[in-house]
Length: 357
Image 1 (cartoon, one colour):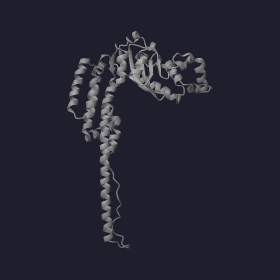
Image 2 (cartoon, one colour):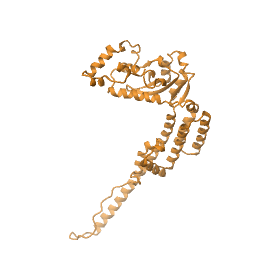
Image 3 (cartoon, helix red, strand yellow):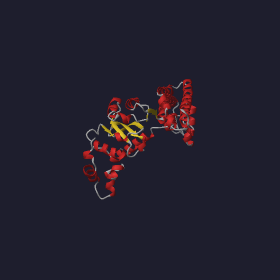
Image 4 (spheres, one colour):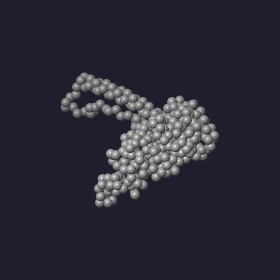
């Protein structure tokens, strides 16, 4: 049946046929599907396990479903369709998730050769405990993302400083305007004007503070605010306006340029087809470049990469990423969005298992 294999809702089918969506859902739930005899219905709110879908190459990630955080283990060979979901467990605690995954036969878990993930320590602990023979690979996207988070911290720090500077300049300008207004008032008292006299200039009013406008029309604060997406992209993806904004940003804040150039060097390492030894050599050269700089945010990101260097370098074996898990999360969230709220969580988990399991 279509609802067993595709992420279609009863409301959507109801628009195609002269039937109420609620009637279709009720009939499918109680009669057409095998939900009533589904063996995992009682514990579906907390966990679902589909051992038959386990494969040699897995991904593990977390996502938000039904207003809760769930850990999802998926098989890359499923390509985001049926046979993809291996397990869904509420929460991210390593001991809780590991207890559920350990229910799978040890012989099946021993067959797993590779598992991809982000920098999460809990995910790392789960993989080590449940899949002892698997090679752990840290996703290269999350490596660059961690560095971009350091650059984002720098951007916010400079933005706060720019806002403080702007407030001080506005206060000084207002104080100066008040002083000039008092002087004008004093002059008018001492030099009273003849009512019949029309000469003289128009009375001056207090001026409002206007911050410095840069060549692209932004103020300093606006420049830092609007540079958020720019700093997370590679320079070859910038248009003309973004290039102008980046030039102004880097001219005003050389430290931002230094941090961005260090991130570009890491991007370049992961773009190249290198062996593990070659990548390790280039990564250690990058460590030296970071040591020279004075950017504490980038150094913190470097320490994070250094602590899991072996798993980071494992990427260069098969160039495996966690993109399949991110794609699955996106599909599941898209399906959830079509439902406009989930009243029956076990039935929703059943639909997830039939569509993606």
